[in-house]
Length: 325
Image (cartoon, rainbow, N blue to C red; front, side, top):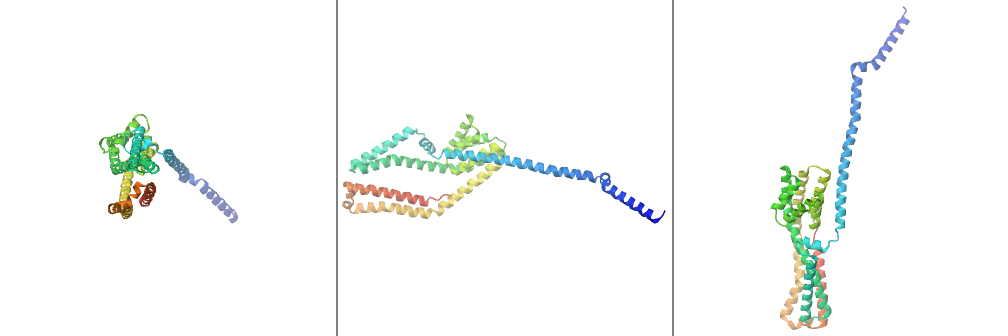
């Protein structure tokens, strides 16, 4: 056998060994199976990822839907009816009772103005202002006072609900605890939530009605958290715990804003009281100089115009020192 034949045989054997190494060895060593497993895992990972993304997207859509429902309900209730304002002030009057009381106040002031000697036009203006503006101002004052009491007790009420949920109680029973042990107006408002839910309304919507009776951002936060958790699920105790912290931080911020605005409020009080003080001092020292305003038609007209201008100035100053956050 010559060298050429040996070389060809060696090359043929080497080529066959190389082909066997490439195509047969992976099956014998298990490398092919390992590649298949890696490929299956690589294909399964995007599927799991897509499933997680779909679940997250579904939860996000539910949250967006809940927020849209809350916003649409609030837009519908931008114009507050008189009966709702009376309820927000904490009064048990009907609309007819409020209108009768307003009419009595207006007629009383009108009669007093005619008795003092006012001209018909200024007397009608004073009677209208007293009958229309004074009762509604009282409603606003009572509403703000009631809202302040509600805000003072809301963080503690949310903490009670959080502790009840962490102890294993349902959300409805935790709200019952607040309605039973809290002070007014927390007690009556949460009792209204329980009554509304007892007649068949979902708890999220019942808490949304709480915002209609107590139109505060903090109440809106509470209603949104309950509405989202009842629809999309999640850790309710953690969400309400974070809400309680936010409520307390907002309360601290409100106190800080009030402290920083006290100088402006004191200046506005002094400026607003100055015309009345000067008028009283002039009337005490020179009564004849001021009597012209009370006994002549022109004096009545000037007094009505100055009262309207004074009220407008007080309103402008109030808007300037009313800091929102």
